[in-house]
Length: 289
Image (tube, rainbow, N blue to C red; front, side):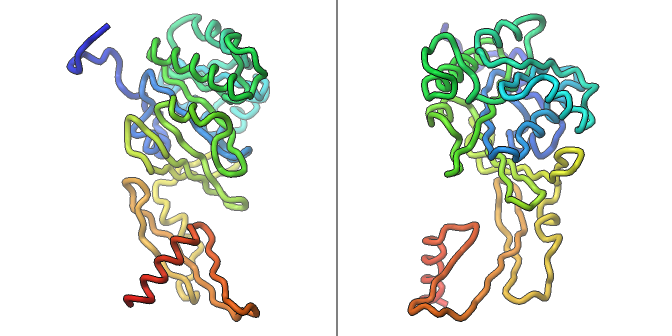
């Protein structure tokens, strides 16, 4: 059916969670009828973040369905109790078959948001291969995205990340969804960064910053304060750098250390940045400064 750009929008275009850093990363909230892919290392806090988001939306009267293929319902309830959100009306299911999931969520009012944790555990009768294979992941994602577009429900797919830092499974899934977010964190640190790498409905390279605590994730409205909280102003070889992350300026500390080398050719090493880019910038500075 052909239509025009000037048609009416039936529902509100976005579902705002009220979690400021999450809404910032998604471009202002979940868009109805969209599919969003969230990836991250195991144990980084993806399920915690989405449980808190589901509870926040459900408390506002939205119908939220959380489907887990990795945990039993009792495990999800335990996490909700730890986070203090067990009394919110989030609907739970432990299921991996796409056809059964669609039949379950079809009961009652259309869901506003469906969370599927994770895409690697889903399988569909339309494909003959084993769950987790490229064929199954692609077919399951296609079925859920088709459901989102036809009903107007927003879909969140959780994806595992490989050791190279890419979401496991076929790259075509990242092209199929409307937004891709990575949940990142360094071992031994309590802060987490939700980074947007693709968003058809908002800016890319946007970040949301969270702090992990015993009660779950706490949003950090001023990341610069967190990043510079342990800074020693008089420490040699350290300087503050002002950079842009999406639409937000962020202050971070850059540290440099020079030590004698026993090698014939001294070596430069860098952490958190591309080594080739560092060599190019240092060459430019040496030539012109």
